[in-house]
Length: 435
Image: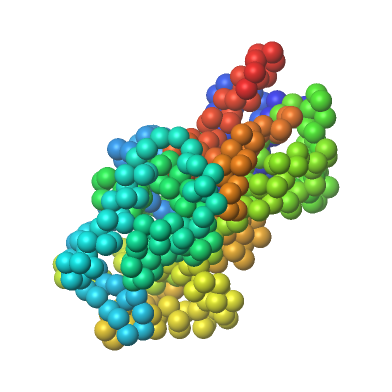
């Protein structure tokens, strides 16, 4: 019997296994897919051209210490997000704005004041501490911004924030969940920033999945079992047994479940999870968060060229638009992505001169069912705050959705995995301790 079985090898899972192993625990790790990484998936391009990131991609060297320490430990090279040039906004078929990247579009002074007020309000709220009120949790983000006096055009802008950040409409998540997400990520502006002050600053030259592979090596290959999707988790007073779909059975004193809470209902738990835990997790959702990546030999969209192996445009196709797009045949998805790029770049002929094209629909991926972090139903963030993510018997829960910092990011996953493993080690090494 193992001390611990970890289910899932995304960032939180491999980190939990590594931390537990460092604490002297015997560990076995189960992964449904045929490789480690979870929603961090780096696809190699043609030989020597690098990788396309179909999942999580960005990190920060000064604000995210865990992921950056691994980058240094494993000698991984990074590239900075390109920040220079002109931003393009196309809020509708007949509207198109160009403005210097990092600034507010040049609306009339009255109209410009409204979005800046909304932005500053969210930044101020996101720098506060503690859980938001149940009242704020019961209203949608859309209702909340209208109560602030947002003009129709800028209510649409806030909807775009929700679409980009979470893959949902602003009518589909609570204002409290949105603000809480920002609070766990060093404020609203840090989430939106692409420079050294924010979460979208650096990318790995050899793909972010290289980190999970390297951590997995520290856990050791013989301790990791891939292609082992879970069927049932049975929790006894003294131990846990996990049965896979292919009939394998693993026993351990403790289990760490490192999969999105939205997926819990796919497993058979015996005894059943407490009703409160079922209520909150059965109603979490993952956003429609899709990527289309168009690769080119030359960056025709830039005025200055820095020589490297490949250049690409990463397109996010999210929320309602994503739900329609993701159900198209693959060739129609590609055509739709290129059509949108031609609109943005004023019918530039080089849009269609791509050398490779990739897309990824996370809602269709059996063991993910969306991205980034599971989102609560209206009112559930505050109502179930005391049970959400807390251990149930011998079962512990980790994942970026539970992180107290950098929720939805790789750093948050590492943070949660580390915390969960230390929690388990503490209980096993001191059985009388209270969690």
